[in-house]
Image 1 (cartoon, rainbow, N blue to C red):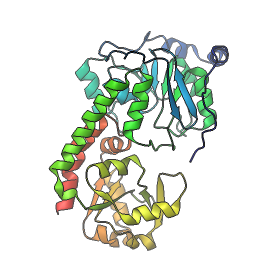
Image 2: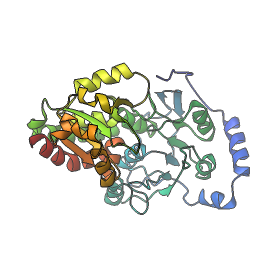
Image 3: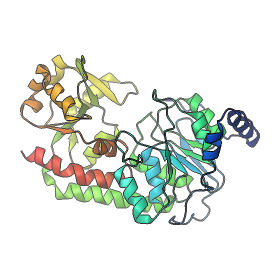
Image 4: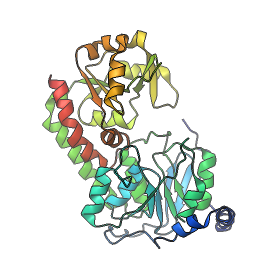
Amino acid sequence: MFELVRRGTRTSGRSRVLVTLMLAAALPLTACAQSSNRAEADTSAAAPVEESAFPVTVHHAFGDTVVEAEPTRILALDTAAADTAIALGVTPIAMQRNDWAGDEDGFLPWTRAELDRSGQTLPDMASFYSEDGGLMFEQILSVAPDLILAPYSGFSEQDYERLSEIAPTLPYDSEPYQPSSWQNLAHDVGTLLGRPARTEELVRGTEDTIAQAKSDHPEFAGVTFAFGSYLREGETNVGIYKPGDPRVQFVENLGLTVAPDVVTGSEKAGGSSFTYSVSLEELDRVETDVFLGWASEQAEVDATLDQTLFAKWPVVAAGKDLWITDNRLTSATMYVSILAAPWATTELVPQLSEIVSS
């Protein structure tokens, strides 16, 4: 767990200006030009700001984020945050593009569908993380945001402080890359956007969609599952996602039950990682009715199944393994959001029903 190092974090106007000026001096002219592409976020389809919504404070792993007035230049550094804003009709000025699972512009299908449905202006899409996962602060500054949303993230407190010098920043609420729940993530974003009641309505609507899928598939009741990944070349341990991981929570909400051996293994492993490792020699000790695994392509699945000890795992030997090789579906179950969850439910539930009933 990350300790709450400080509370009531506010960035003074003077220090923010100083940092902005220092960083701006290093920016190329093209980046400066990019920051003026759009004057403010498109709010033509937005739900109205609610009465007494500002100023507002949201607590998180590093302290508190305070927003004094309605933000108009929102930068979303993760898909789940962007989805919440877009579902509210508040288009981010820019958002992190997804080159792994997105379309040619970097949009995931449910995000693009909502933008098209509501007629919102498309956000500027760019990469704000380097190839090694570090934040690209000059790129972030070029957008000139007045609110940075990154609740599904894992950057350090030092990076958080640096981002906060640019604009109020919302990092993860508890653990890196492990929102306490997709609902809390949505509420935090909606609160900072001044629309908490409307966000609650949207959350309830998505919960109803998931609950209906659960009700429509009573065969899921009592079925245990483990969720993990494929074996990379040379690996001798299988990565299993812990019960707190968004992927696991999503499948659990559909009506399946996390395998008791996964719960026990996670508790023994401890630590803040969202996975724990099981050696191939001990894999048969993990009893589960169904195994869900993700891989980027079928070749990775085939290579994993070629590993003798993995193939002998009783759940795999019985053909009760379901592999997700659609990167869009992997993203939808990882970055669970108001918009992603219904899309993931439609895609995943028929596959789960088939594997459970076989």
